[in-house]
Image (cartoon, rainbow, N blue to C red; front, side, top):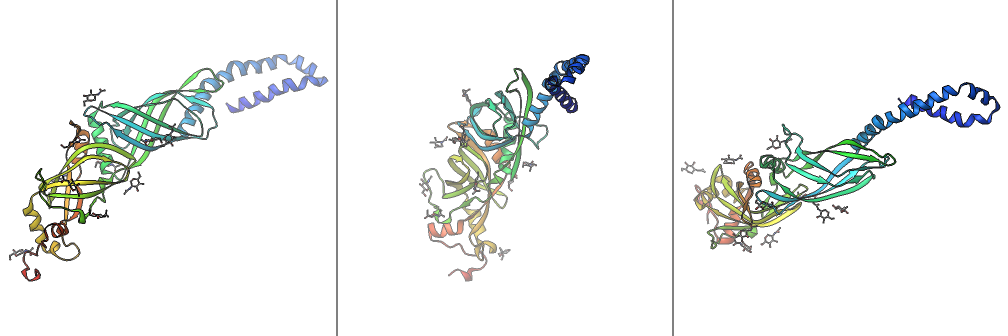
Length: 350
Ligand SMILES: *[C@@H]1O[C@H](CO)[C@@H](O)[C@H](O)[C@H]1NC(C)=O
Ligand SMILES: *[C@@H]1O[C@H](CO)[C@@H](O)[C@H](O)[C@H]1NC(C)=O
Ligand SMILES: *[C@@H]1O[C@H](CO)[C@@H](O)[C@H](O)[C@H]1NC(C)=O
Ligand SMILES: *[C@@H]1O[C@H](CO)[C@@H](O)[C@H](O)[C@H]1NC(C)=O
Ligand SMILES: *[C@@H]1O[C@H](CO)[C@@H](O)[C@H](O)[C@H]1NC(C)=O
Ligand SMILES: *[C@@H]1O[C@H](CO)[C@@H](O)[C@H](O)[C@H]1NC(C)=O
Ligand SMILES: *[C@@H]1O[C@H](CO)[C@@H](O)[C@H](O)[C@H]1NC(C)=O
Ligand SMILES: *[C@@H]1O[C@H](CO)[C@@H](O)[C@H](O)[C@H]1NC(C)=O
Ligand SMILES: *[C@@H]1O[C@H](CO)[C@@H](O)[C@H](O)[C@H]1NC(C)=O
Ligand SMILES: CC(=O)N[C@H]1CO[C@H](CO)[C@@H](O)[C@@H]1O
């Protein structure tokens, strides 16, 4: 097709160049019909073909080549049936075509989870084809498919990275051409996941074992790392607390909002004392490098934000057991002045 195009252009140039030369007059006059045919071909065939097939193809190609980058996602005002979702993104392209891409509704789904089920519908604004542009949206998001949202949250929580696809149909308008062309916006982006909050630690010198009015016998500062781009409002979160595969208590974190970076929160808990004291007496935990450090595990039990239960977070948090080693031995020593002895070695306790 481009060959036809090129020769057509060359021949039209000849039409305007040659009349100055004397020889052309005769030649041009004799072959006027040939020029007419070329002109007809250009007008009747080439132009429509370029407009109908070429431009949409190029427009789709340019759109496919553009890069979408998600810079930040905030999930707030979380309620049982809806939330507010804000996305800051950047679109990069070569900027060679001057075009406008209509506003459109795009769905988001996990690329690697079959069948691909949308967990959110986002309204993207009109954009242009500038080489670099930021697209920031913030919208009310009704939860249409709580199951799909829960699966997405589970992947976000459990995985080191995950791939999300944004898909939507829209129209593109190229400058100088009056019609709109349908195009499909489809971009898959890879983003870091929370990796089950690996690296969560409890500051051992902050541990208090005083019984409070709610019956909590553990209170400490927790450091929760967020490797992801997500900033989300959870609310009041409770976790089941396990030690050696046995549930021994409940952990509470109030008003939890997980932001990118390190999150520092008070963690309180009601924990059975018997299993903890027994464990501290075991040879592996009563001496040596792991003295006092017990391998606790927690998994989500409930998430309630201003009275609204959020199952899409609670079920995701329940799908993983997150390990948090806690130097409870040091806590007991600081708080109560007691050093739990090795249970079978009375000699070392002096
Ligand atoms: C988006 O950018 C705005 C302006 O810089 C900022 O206030 C907001 O927190 C960002 N939101 C997200 C979701 O990153
Ligand atoms: C959002 O969901 C809550 C229930 O979770 C409902 O009470 C509220 O009316 C909803 N908001 C809107 C604007 O639909
Ligand atoms: C979008 O948010 C980014 C920060 O993430 C900010 O730098 C940019 O100016 C915002 N763009 C618009 C159009 O608001
Ligand atoms: C992400 O995590 C989910 C749930 O743990 C798991 O089933 C899935 O295979 C993981 N996907 C990837 C791509 O790692
Ligand atoms: C741990 O907690 C103690 C007492 O609350 C505090 O003085 C100390 O700065 C904390 N350490 C870190 C690393 O935050
Ligand atoms: C936990 O301890 C902190 C101080 O370290 C205190 O501010 C907070 O009120 C305590 N929480 C409870 C529930 O006792
Ligand atoms: C977490 O550990 C407990 C105790 O070992 C177990 O009963 C539970 O099934 C585990 N949960 C997950 C999601 O692996
Ligand atoms: C402690 O001693 C008892 C009986 O003497 C024994 O059965 C048990 O295995 C010992 N425990 C440890 C942790 O060594
Ligand atoms: C968390 O619980 C406390 C005490 O019950 C309550 O005052 C607070 O409003 C709750 N916070 C949220 C975000 O639901
Ligand atoms: C402690 C930790 O993992 N922090 C990371 C949290 O996420 C941001 C990016 O969103 C990283 O820059 C931090 O290093």
